Image (cartoon, rainbow, N blue to C red):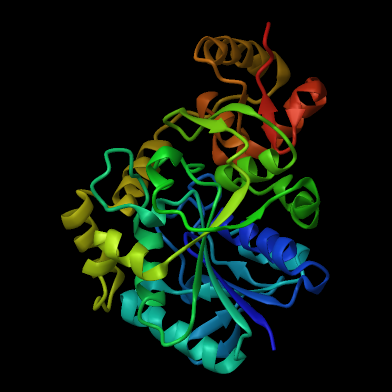
Length: 365
């Protein structure tokens, strides 16, 4: 017997799933299969949208429609993925959600995996809670992956527990808007719960899961994230995990209901444009083209630190106390390939400002 955790949005949700597994199941940690997208931000994967099994070498079949991502798997260039490294560093089994055949395809993958594993529990995990979006919220930015997994889980004939970790952390739906929907508290994360993924958070670019871990470690304040510089409150409510009724989530999520019978990702995208007014993959396509046109910026202390000082001064004026290395990379006009080098440079130059995995903005220059 094993457990199945579905990481609703891919990216950092897969790391949060490993954290959840440790927090809720303790010493039995590592027996979970984490079903997740290979969908990383452009800092990691310069190709817009999610990756399917055809974008990897070295995958291993679990069922006819589901592939395991082992440590030796590799994304086929120019694509990138954090999943092989996660598989190398964590004890869990990572299985790939392939959205290429729409909700019908993901539902089939879930059904096959449940039949194959006969799991003792199935959790659907979303960090931030934008899975609970109606679809018309002006702050909504990335509803597609969450709606797709929610719609598939809603059609599977098996009991699935929906969990929302860190309400409001992704900057898309404010925590105040989610409180009326959140069900009972399942767990409040602590520093001990973060330990099993601590080394992963040193390199993984997820902002929401990074903030979730930082708050579990006691960090409080306001963190600026994403290219848009969204301010996210770091509060006592941040490291909580709540249960939510799956049917209620489906009744709220207009996009999830609209895409129930889709058989291709193109259909899902078209309905996202219709229901929400946009497709996040279109945004990634446009941003990828823009990034290609940006000139290379030299990365050394003499060039970077004065610009960092200016960024921090501006951030202080906005009431910001922390930020992420993804935000710093983009704010300093650096490329995704320079993110890790920037992180090492800043930690070596000003170690007192590193509040793992966030960067602290000092109160004074």
